[in-house]
Length: 290
Image 1: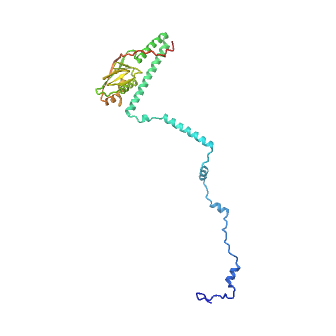
Image 2: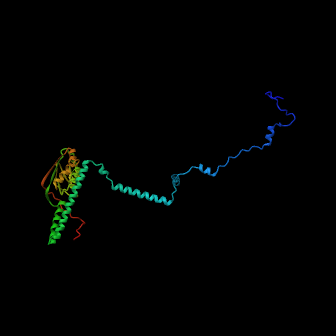
Image 3: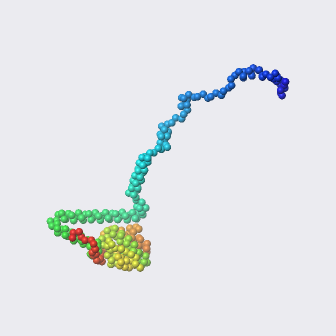
C-alpha cells in the first residue's frame, strides 16, 4: 500500500505494531522526567544578595521611627521650652518701631535721650552736693531746714502754687485759619516737658502735671478755661534745649505750619510765669511724720 504521497506504507494487516528499531528503542527507554533546576551553593546566593553600607543600615534603623510615650513627652517639653525662648529673644530684640522710623524721628529721639541723661546727671550732682553740705555743716539741723525750704519752693513751682522766673522761651501760635486743635497744643506741651521745661503758662493758665486740653468751639480749653488764638506759651528752662526741640524736622513747628499756622519761637534771659493755681488739700492722704 502507498500513502497519499505515493510512498509504500508498512503492512499493518497482521495486527502487529511496527517493529522498526526506532520504535523498539522508544519502548525500552524510560519516560522522560523534566529535571529540576540545580540548587545554587549558599556562597553564590549570598554573593548575589545586595550588600548594605553603614549609611544604609543607619537609615534602616532610624526609619520608620519608633517612639515611646516617654520620648514623646520629652520632645513636647523641649519644643515648648525652645518656643518660649524664641519668643523671649524676639521680644527683647524688638526694634521694629525704630527700624521703621524716619531719620528726623530718630534724631529727635536721640536728642531727647541726651537731654534726659544730662538732666538726670545734673540732678544726681545736686543731690550729692546736698549730702556733702549736710555732712560738712557744723549745724546740720539748720542746713537741713534750709534744704527743706528750698525743696518746698521747687515743689511749689512744679505744682503751680508759686510764681517763677528764669531764662526760657516764648512760643506764639497765630491760628488765623482755625485749624489748630487741642491735641496739637498738647503735643507742644509734651515736647517742652521732654526738653526740660520747668514751668509753663499758656494764655494765663498755669500748666501742671494734671493739666488737660479739650477743643471748645472756636478755641481750646485748658483745665476748663477757654483760650483763643493767638496761643502764647511762656516756658522757663534752658533755651538751648527748648528751641531746638520745637524746631526739629517733623516736630511741633513743622506740624503747625502744615496746618497753615504761624509759629514764632523767641529766646529770653528772663521769663516770668506768674499764673498760679490754688493749693489742693488731699482728702485722705496725710503726711506720715504727723
